[in-house]
Amino acid sequence: MATNLAALLYLAAGVLFILALRGLSSPETSRRGNKLGMLGMAIAIGTTLAFKVEEWDALTLGLIVAGIAIGGIIGAIIARRIPMTAMPQLVAAFHSLVGLAAVLVAAAALYAPQAFGIGTVGGIHTGSLVEMSIGVAIGAITFSGSIVAFTKLQGLVSGAPVSFAGQHILNLALGIAALVLIILFCSSESHALFWALTVLAFVLGILIIIPIGGADMPVVISMLNSYSGWAAAGIGFTLENTALIITGALVGSSGAILSYIMCKGMNRSFFNVILGGFGGESAAAAAGGPAGDRSVKQGSAEDAAFILKNAGSVIIVPGYGMAVAQAQHALKEMAEFLKEEGVKVSYAIHPVAGRMPGHMNVLLAEANVPYDDVFELDDINSQFPNTDVAFVIGANDVTNPAAKSDPSSPIYGMPVLDVASAKTVLFVKRSLGSGYAGVENQLFFKDNTMMLFGDAKKVTEEIVKAM
Amino acid sequence: METAVIDPIIFRLSIFVLAIFVGYYVVWSVTPALHTPLMSVTNAISSVIVVGALVAVGVELVTGEEMVSKILGFAALILASVNIFGGFLVTQRMLAMYRKREKPRSED
Image 1 (cartoon, rainbow over the protein chains, first blue to last red):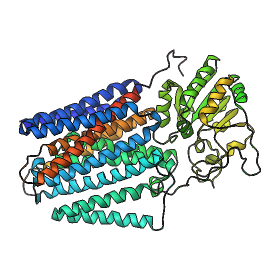
Image 2 (cartoon, rainbow over the protein chains, first blue to last red):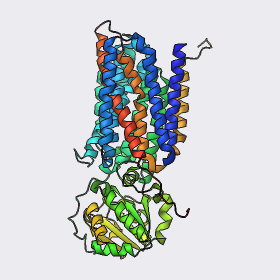
Image 3 (cartoon, one colour):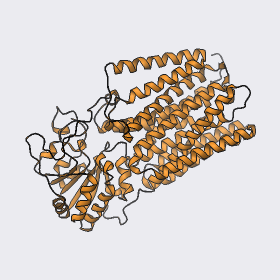
Image 4 (cartoon, chains in turn blue, green):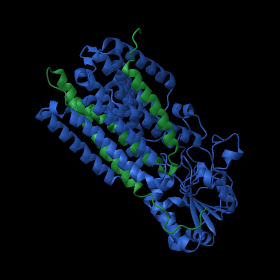
């Protein structure tokens, strides 16, 4: 009876998690959704505590209270202090924790199977061993892969792809070795093989992520999100816990869909991205140095202020450069000023702008930009021809018309924001350097383009001052 | 395979497969503007793995082996707790920032 009740409560937790994701279909319902998610988590934890507490001694209770308190305090402090611009690396770090927790729980189940009801030491059910080994392998890959992603996003290591000869062969060989280890482990329940599998998966996780360049991080983060879900589901099967199985499936498919959306935003296949090595960060050209013999029109902040003030409509196109320079607040100030002058201001967001899905939206929300002024690519692209000024700030490849006109370009076919068809394009950029794809942007050399060289935040502040 | 009893793992597998489909449709309905909160909240909910950590910490000590479990479980409990609190709170902080235009102008 008690077991059935517990199972029903876990099911309820799973349903609440579904509702938490469902709430994200619009900003109005999202806050309530998040609360339902918290409630689901409280039910899951409360159920486990309530049905186990009588078996526990004082040491166990002390450890549980301490563990939740330590983790909870650290988590709460991080959540409060983290700047919004650091969100991609925070999410990567959180993925690594889920991965490592999956590894630890699987190991704990291996050493004390009776506590999990999956057999005895040396006699764990084969099915449980299979679930456990899959969970631990994916968990370990998620952990080390997310650590690499974190160090790249945090700038601790270069974002450039690391590739070497025979890389894919090596990864394939390690992948096959992991499968062999899983089979051997499942037939022997050898602890040594378990740890060998874990270490191998750690190495594999690192090797999978290092060849992927910094600007492909939106795909990497989504992919690791998906992996963390599958790892959780694997452990859920071991624990025979419905909440965990449902959650794992939800998170797994969520990450997979986000990866798909990001790949589509770059017009590249998933395999093309994960095999990596795409366009290393090209050495940025010296600031202001014109490339080749074509000339660009360079403007001052005063010129830009004049053009913006006299425009009827302005579309702002933010990119990763805005995040790096933390220019969102200055940008919002500029937009406010323009609105007071009667200018219609909207924002256009490309799916892969920034380093993670939805990165730009969060930064704009942080700067108090109302979300109904912010539009997705498909919704706003037709507006550019009727727009007086496109204000591109820290974006590059996502505006490159070569994606439509030049079949030889590496980014040909990628959906781009049609800024070139606006009457005037103001391009805020540090230099004439090409984007991560290593492609020169023809937009710089067009007659209706004015370049504003400098740090995104500084330039925007100067424009506001000049207004 | 003579018996008519279905292995319980089949039921769990059914839940799993159906939940993937639920996830598929629910996630496609998430507005792209909220993709970052989606990632942080999925992060938080996948930390429901904490239930496994709790069981591991609660293991009864009979031989030395269980101590390993207890320690591993304790470490997992801390990690999962960081994620639960961090994930939900940072999501809440983000979602609180999304606001509508104060005076809605023409509907278009």
